[in-house]
Image (cartoon, rainbow, N blue to C red):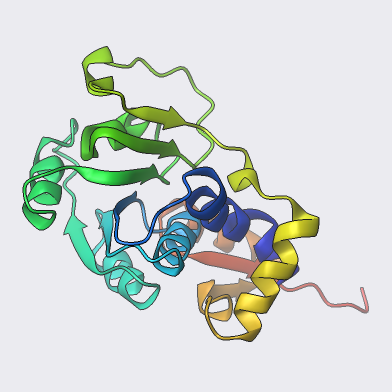
Length: 212
């Protein structure tokens, strides 16, 4: 479990809890429901968000997102490159206004500015996936008073946050075992990379024989 905590869990959960500081009663959107996105969902739900909206192009991932705390889902289309339809769907769910928070969890450079499209004025957009490529922004997306942040590992401090996460896990308030979609051996690790790139996994785990 420590290997999972040290990456996807603290990045996602920490982005919601530490970086964005999701407030109770708010609305949070999560773009991409893989390992990081599912943990953003968990963090937002635990923070008391009234609406946690999962966004993905996979129906299967959206169904899984519900089990991690998503209250609503939006099935995105690859043809909706500017997220115009997704933005309309968010407003329809959220009584005509944008979300308070939106998190990008896909690592797709073209979606780097997408969370800005989904938030209200003075809302917070979080690029949680670690996109490192150059991205061009339409400055109009920042109107008005919107905040865009790119936290490192969810601004988590292991000595502070790992005990918190383990306590939440022990109390049954955060899912960790359920994140593991499939396990692999060193002999089948290539299959694991294929599954990851194809979007079949929340988390894949390589099990190494301790006698090796």
